[in-house]
Image 1 (cartoon, rainbow, N blue to C red):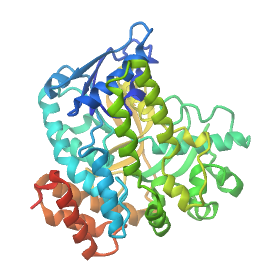
Image 2 (image 1 turned 180 degrees about the vertical axis):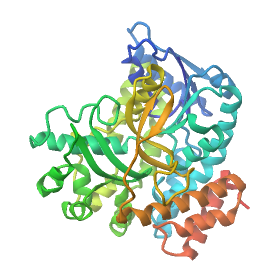
Image 3 (image 1 turned 180 degrees about the horizontal axis):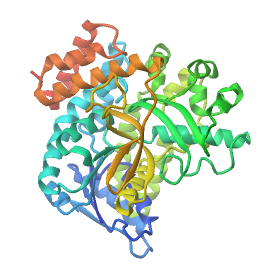
Image 4 (image 1 turned 45 degrees about the horizontal axis):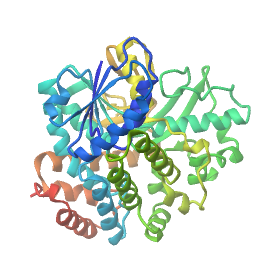
Length: 461
């Protein structure tokens, strides 16, 4: 099988290649094509992949492509992992938002609107080329904001687009690991959860980066109540410390970590304002250093540098939110995410082998949630097999989720309208309606700053 990665110079690509190296199945990927508009980034990542493959037999061939059609022709799977504007764009969005007293996080905050406005026109163009060059390929979207990007790609390519995020899987595994440690579920229950290799059913509902874990069925029995009854257990893992045992017990569900920006907006904004550097600034400096060095290093040294950079990146993930919640460090178990690479490999296996897998994915609503229309992309448990993706039945949105989900979906729809039609008014509606914006006047000022900062937004009129 041939895999094409759009954004092939992305920092997480070696995680994908590592997963492919571990795959010994008959229908495994035999060639990986890297396409990136920045050849320096692509060369640096290719060096890391070369080191990962060193000394191993029958590894997937790595081809760096400079032309989009060259990368796409004959592809069985296409991963979309682009970042229009790079980490510099993210850093600028965060600075602009903070200057106006807002949270600028790249998917949840108003920075996510700017990021989408830069990226969605490019995503639409890429989807059109995929439809023209490799219409039978399955597209797995990593690109953020994942819900909006998946919705735009689906409108062009239909049901062969699957959006993924590792946050729900990581949350479910941390909860199950906590219950395992308390001898409340059998050892090994967390293994493979959300990756197809488990009988555990994860009851999760919402939008990308805006969802809630409502249940965990192990051998047909919902064990989440065991956690909710124990404040000490809730306080022992990352989301429990972020949201506090009291709030999680009040909800009767465990929120996705990104909901911290909504539930603790004031604290999160204060922590970001007090931080030495925003997350985007930090990543711009850190990854800039990696890419500047990697393409000229021997493969083995490039891989070692990548590993050090990755470990530091994981350890500092959502650092300002942890600061806002009481300045705690990430435990070893907190560092284990769901893994974009593992989720993507599980999807490819399920489709190529017709081996049904239950995964949490971003897919069209198709009548699951009555508050949203059929095409609205939501994040829910799905079954994947050779025939494609089949969303599983879910209970209605609980009252605590309904308002946020419908409001944020409206913001997403306004953003998509702006990106696809060039409507500046739609962009303003998106910024003004965002739950983390407290003034229409501020929304207008932020939009002006985004337009003045990002040349990619010149299409907005």
